[in-house]
Image 1 (cartoon, rainbow, N blue to C red):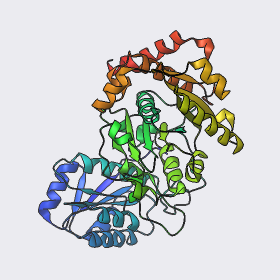
Image 2 (cartoon, rainbow, N blue to C red):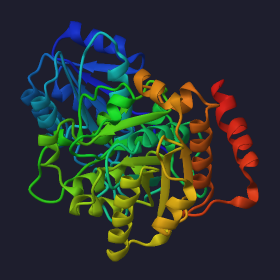
Image 3 (cartoon, helix red, strand yellow):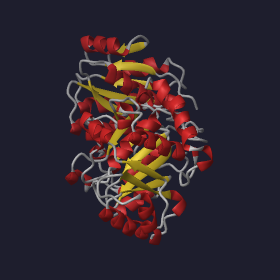
Length: 439
């Protein structure tokens, strides 16, 4: 269903604040003095149009929540969704948690720029357009529902030891995917997604102990999955919640979702919470690139069950190859489908490294891709930008583009399409990806 442009009703609690909110949100916004006036104003609109109620910062969070539920209870037969966004002068994590736990779609600080508020209202409006089923019974669609259809593709990267460049590869793959169209056969409706202005991809830092995706992209996440209020049963996450946690990267080609910003917080996150977040993202983003930790514990294995394909990353270093062999043996004994995983050899050509033939012979697995050692990668890390954006003609970038082409062109992403040739692949990526971005 195509989302309808929502009506916006402001319950500010004070005329001056209401005028400021109207100025921030633009024309077509109504300000009302109280809950009864809000019910009356909403009742005069077509009952299929989603309504976003903006609750001003003059009220306490408790008052805003009570007002929102009073308005909703006054509209029991409305078909279109009614969602709420709380605005605060200064938003604390405790208030944000309380807002989401109460059923509000979002909570944002007023700030000096109206951009954040406009995005929050747009996200909430999209959620409101999904908030009714065929029978007209209101419900917030979440990834936990059996009828939620996954449309985007989820690619995970893991490794047997640290220092193999797994996270660098993750951000560069996400940047390339973010600048391209949807995967073959994808039915993702990304143009109507609240993440639309961040590109076609989201990179998820699921290293719950020492993830550094945010650092590599120069992002300081305000909220993470660790900020989701704990639930007594299965976690319930929806698109407004998740999109509130996704930060834009400097290249504007992909969004960034961090599971936990510090190890002590990562310990409290369940695999089911991460799995649900990935499912929700796959309804809105066309590519999700997941950076897992450097060892496969039970939590990581549970996450891998919802992943479409896993890239096992190693380097040409002897100790890394040995550890990777053990990891591949483990995943084989655990029953992971060989069609859903591929070997990736990074930093080939590094001093003292093994050659590709020796690595393939030792691991008994032909690599999907061989990524060369490249000084441009170090420069890009220091600049907190993907190498494919800073140095698109470098050997590293060409190899990543080729890898992305193989993943994109093959539903199983497990076999190179040799008949197309390297030149054909790179040429197509240059014309389709780099040229439109002005590279």
